[in-house]
Every structure is written in structure tokens, then in C-alpha cells.
Image 1: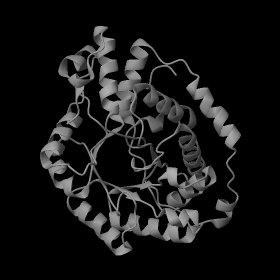
Image 2: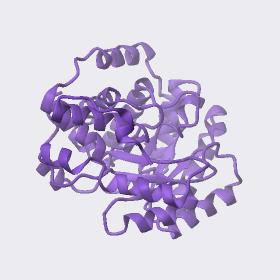
Image 3: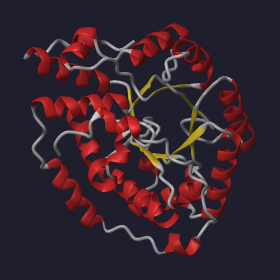
Image 4: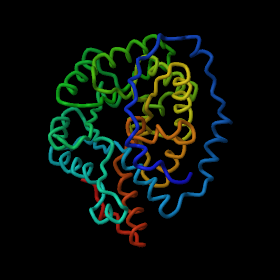
Length: 328
């Protein structure tokens, strides 16, 4: 895979124009068929790759940190915990490791919290240029009333959230009610206003890869800025199979409309090796533009710990104990 593009190249990349959507095209959806054997072959080629070594691996792991939505979604979240998480987002690596890696500064792509923790996160990140993302619309099940879900989005935006991670109604996918899913996604996008909207598909509950592909297309047609695999609360979360199907839907949507849509795998990505596989997938399927936080995010909490340990080993030649990199 080699080195990622240099920092200067990322600095010159412009924020993508927001996805304006397109009319719902049912004939396009009905024509979608996912070749599961081809998906399995492509994914096995990723798993069989030799991992990057030394400075190449370090460069890619730094890129993974920059594309990370550092997340806490626990019932015992407090303003204090969120403040500590935001401090970690502002400086994810120790100063000596940053210096050894030749970096002046580094921060995560965003911080992701529940609605009640948006205000503390906004206060802790003020002036640092790190977006706050709020999960919304009855997360994780998405079974609240439509009125409640829309109001939740509005309140999170008013509290200062820059991004809203919504959950779709899985029943619309399972019953193939694409018009209902399209209308729902359009309403969520409108309620977000200037805040970017990430559509969580909960792919582990959609039963088939065909459904994953069609749900991805409907959400993009309705104006989603990102499509996201999972809430992290399902039995099966992000996988490379599902990711391949979703990123190829993004590629085909770009070819059809000219709009770039972001991608966020979430749930179950806890090792540096897994992060490198996802970065490889993005580079090979979508190109360097999808190696920037405007178009790619990891939804992660424990992933940063393993990346820190790998980077410390690169710098010092020794692995540190995991508790030295404890998350808030």
C-alpha cells in the first residue's frame, strides 16, 4: 500500500460539495444484485496482504487517528468523562511521540456522543476545530415516533452538534418499502440543516448484502452526507464484506451524480491491523480523497489504544502496557 499521501496534499484538499441527492429511482434499486462470491474473493485478498512495516505503518496509523470519531456512548457518561475524552481527541498522542514522529499537532476527526453530552463536548472543543457528532433519532433502535426523532435532531443542532448520526428504520429495508425510507431520510436531512448527516444502516440487521446495497443507495439518493455501517450495539457490526458493498455503492453513486459521499465503519474495529485493512480498502476502491476525515471516519473507542501502542513500539522498540493508554 505504501505511504499515504503527504500531509501537504491533504491540506490542499477542499471539503466536498454536500450531496444534494436525486429522485428515488426504483428501477435502479431493483437492478442491484451483489455477487457474494466476488465480494468474498476481494475481501480475502485484503486479509492475505502483508502488513505495512516501520515508517510506512506509522504513517498509515497516524492517518487512522486523524480519521477517527472518538466515541463514548455509555449509559454512565458524565460531563467529566466527555471532557476527558475531548482532551484525548485534542491530543491523542503524547508530546514525545508526536515529536519523534515529526508531527507538530494531531487530533481526531471528531468526537461522538449522546445528545445530553453535546453541550459539554462543544465547550471542551471550542476553538480546536474538532467537530462534535451526536447520535440521534432514537439511537440505537430507531423506533421512536417520527416527531420525537426529528425533534431530537433539532435539539442536538441547537446544542452545537456539527454532525448528526441518524439511525434508519430497518423495517423499511426488510419490507422493501424504499419510498418510506427515502422520505424518512429526506426529513432527517432537512432537520439537520447545515449539520452533516450520517445515515446508520445497522447492516447486521439487514439480512442480505443486496439489502445493504439498496439501503445505501436510498440514503444517498435522499441526501446523506455519509453512510455508516452500524450503531456498535448490534450483534454484528462493521465487516469488510459489508464495507466493500457500501464503498462500491458510493463509487457508483459518484459516477452517476458527481457527489462524493463519506463512509464510516463502526463497531468491532479495535486493532491497528484492522484499521490498516479499512484504509487499504478505501484507497484502492475510492482513492486518496477518501483518506481524509471529510470523507472517511472510523467509529471507535478502543481502537486508539492499540494504535498508540503500535506507534510507541515504532518509536521506542518496546510495547507499553495497555493501561498506560487508558481511555477516559
